[in-house]
Length: 493
Image (cartoon, rainbow, N blue to C red; front, side, top):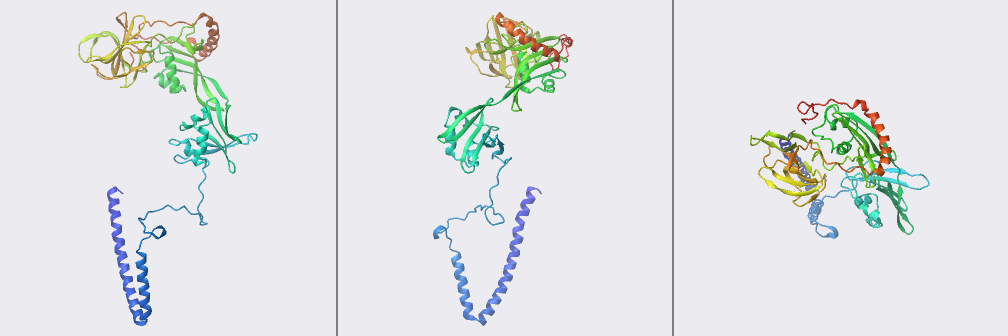
C-alpha cells in the first residue's frame, strides 16, 4: 500500500465509526425516553429524585481537579510497569550474554577458587560511558569517581573505547569488591576494595610472540598476491616500506617477482592479537634479490642488507605510495596541454587528489608557492648538492624555511597549474642538472659499525636460511624485459 492510499484509508474509517455510533446512541436514547416516561407515570416522586441525582453527578464530573483537589492543568499519558500474571510488577530482565543498543555485554569469568573472585565481564559498546556501565550494574557515581581518582593508572580508565573490557566482582551483600581491566598489552590492572579503602595493583599477562613465514609470487599485483599469501594490509605496507629505497613499487613490479618474509605474530592467552615485527624479508624484482634483516645496533632496531648496509637510504625512490606513473622522465616529451615538444624533467605519479606527498630526504624548504604552470609547488634543498621539486599540489603543509625529515608529509596530490588531472610531478636535480628520479644513483647510507658485524652475521645467517627455504636462490632468476617492451603488472612502463 502506498503512502497516498494509506492516508485515504486512515481518514475514511472515523466517518463510518461515528455514523454507526450516532445511530446506536439515537436508538438507545429513544428506548430510554420511553422507559423514563412510563416510569414517571407510574412512580413520579421516585423518578424525579433519580433524575436529580444523575444531573448532579454529571455536573460534578465536569469539574477538573488535580492533586490535593486543585484544578488539573493538563492531561498527559504515563507509562505503567508491565504486570506479571500475579498482578505484581514484573522484574527487570537480567542480561547474561547479549545486549541491545548501549547496554553492556555481561558474561561470567570464574577464577580459581583460591582467589575467591567471580567476574562479570562488560564489553564497552559505541557511545557507552563508564558511568553508564556503573549505573547498569547498580554501582554509584561516587564509587566511579573514587576509582578514577585513586592513581595515575586509574585516571586513564575514564578514556574508554568500544571493545574495551572491564571485569567486576560484585557481591550481592557486600557490593563492589574488585575491578579488573587491561592496563596494557602485557599487564592487568586491578582495583580492589580493602578495609581501609581502595587499593590498586598490576599483574603480568602471558604474551607469546610466534615466528611465522609467508611467501608468494606476483601474478596480478603486490597487494592482491600478498593478500593471497595471508598478509594483512598493514604487513604489506611494512614490506613495501622496507624495500622502498631500492624498488619503485609503482614502476618496477613484474609478473614472476617473488617475495618472502619471516615475521612475528603476537598472541596472548591463546588469542591472536596483532602482527608483530618483520624479522627478515626478501624481494626478487626482475631477477635482482633484495634482502633485509632486522637488527638493533644500539640506536633502535632497523633493517640492513646482508653486508651490513642499511636499507634506509638518504632518499626515497618514490615520494608517495603505490601510485601509477602517467609520464616518465623524457627530454623530448609532447606536452599534453601546450602540445609543444619540451623536456619532461621529472616523473608524473597519477594519484587521487589529497594523496599525501612525502619529502624524499632530509632537507630545507627553499621555495613554496604558486605559479600558473607549476600550480602549488615545493622545492627542497638536501645535502650533496641535491634539490627535489614537487609540483601541482592541491595543498602545501610546509612553508619556505621549514626543516623537513625524510618521509614527512609536505603536501597533497592535486591538479593545480597546467595539469590534465591529479598527479604529482617530481624532479631530482644534482648540481643543478635534472636526473631521472627512477634511475639516478642515490647517495649511500653509513653501514653498520665493524664491532657489530659479528653479531649481525649470526642473526642474518639464521634468517637467510629460512628465506632460502621459502624462495630458493635457484628460483630467483626472472626474465628481464627492457623498458620499452616490459610486461608490467600495473601500467608501469
